[in-house]
View 1: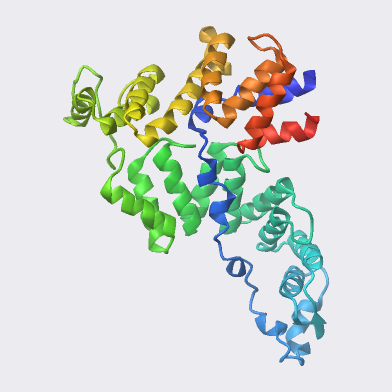
View 2: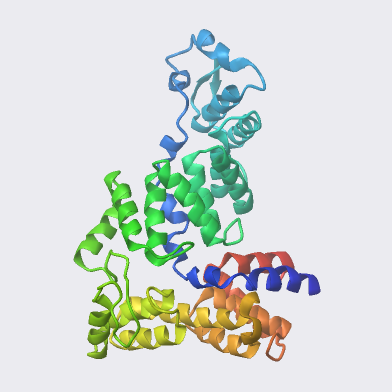
Amino acid sequence: MKYLKEKVLLSFLVLSLPSFVTANTKSEELHFKVLDGIDKAGEMASLGIEKLFSPLHKGVEKLAKPYIEKNNAEYFFNLGQAYYQGNGYFNNQYIKKDDAKALEAWTNASYSGDKIAPFNVGLMYYKGEGTTVNKEKACEWFLRGALLENPSAQVYTGACYYSGQGFQQNLTEAFKWFSVAAKNGNKNAQFLLGEMYSDGQGTELNLSLAKEWYEKSAAQGHVSAQKKLDKLQKSWDIPYKQLTVADMAGKVIDGDAYFVSAANSAQSGDAKAQFELGVMYFRGIGVPQDYIKALDFFEKAAAQGHERAKDYIPRTYFALGSHYFSEDAGERQDDQEAFKWFSKAAELGHAQSQYIVGLMYYFGEGIPKDESKGVQLIKQSAQNGFGEARKVIDEYKL
């Protein structure tokens, strides 16, 4: 059990505070399902040999010759394409659909240097086509393709890091790969990058850049990005501009009166303004970061039915727990105080907090040891979609 504690508790739980703060329970919004809309046929398009698959082209010997040489990346890629599509001709032979053989051929193509095949192999492991579902192998192949500058592989690599399925969750790495793919013109990555900028996940919150990437994605027909822009035009929780604000005393920096206006509105009971002030304190936008003040404003806004404020309450509890629990907490490190805040978040269904509280119970960190309760909470975390919890359950047979 000591190995488990060192491997899981120390290596995962003491990540830097920003990583904890930016992680939230909205993984379903940026989960692989977001990416399932990618046109598989388009992503797996062959390199100009579609005519080889038609029964009408039986005399294909001359066309097929360039692909017959073994250890040829293009040959193996096209062979994999033939098996994946099936019911056509390749190398003068009729090919039936066979996903397992397609996987084998694309794997050979990958080892031979093909830049598209690794992404196809990753998809097959991800979906369990021609093999059993294996998210870890899928992500490894996506990363291989990403390093070969395949934009689709770059998007999926980002999703692996974001969701914590296949790779340990790392929002900074997710942001990096979404950024690379977005700059390469991938509309899905552009949308996801907008999401991360709008929530400050893996990067600093920047609504101007969020809007810019939503627009680029929407221009390519991404429906969710178009909906985001429509929402932004009608009502956005925080203005597009980068806020330059003072403290609660109402001092104005660089002539920006927004904070004063929001503070006055919040004091008058405006839920939207209360939420905006909460975000400012939560993120440290123009004011010193202060989770207690942020929590106060979120609770006031939530009491009036503000839905996003309700979402931020468990995230703020989690941030407070991390504040006392992280490796760089120094003198403020306090396991019991951390447990208090993590428990509050866990009670509201925050998956990462359930995982952490579960481990604290399991190992007796700052609280009396209770392995049974610890396992129960870790399982709840896994059920709520936290990938690291699922890994621990599977690896240690909890």
